[in-house]
Image (tube, rainbow, N blue to C red; front, side, top):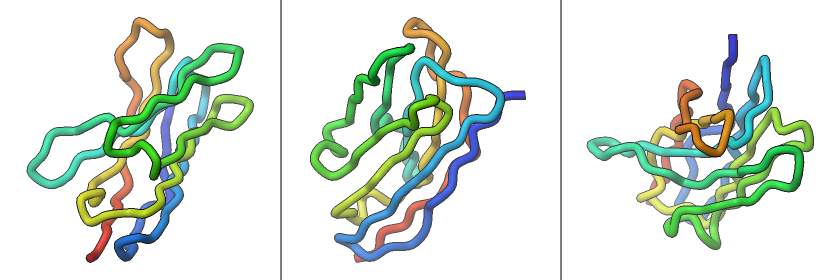
Length: 119
């Protein structure tokens, strides 16, 4: 059974940093990414790493550009989200996701990890 397990969430002051990790058990993915859902809002894309056997192509939402960094390990079984200069509006549950091919939607999801940024 494929599982995605996130870790690294927590409470941080505005301007601080956090690192989220997501480990995939049972397989590798063509792409792995991060999404987040704030209270009362829909889940939104944060960024992802896409690539087969070659180097990943990294994409970011506008809100993440310049502050967040996404990368995978060489085996493509884990994805990381480094978040700097955190703002209160970054407060959300952060989810890791995976998909098998470029044509797929993200259909494997982790359980989520809470990130809370205080002002």
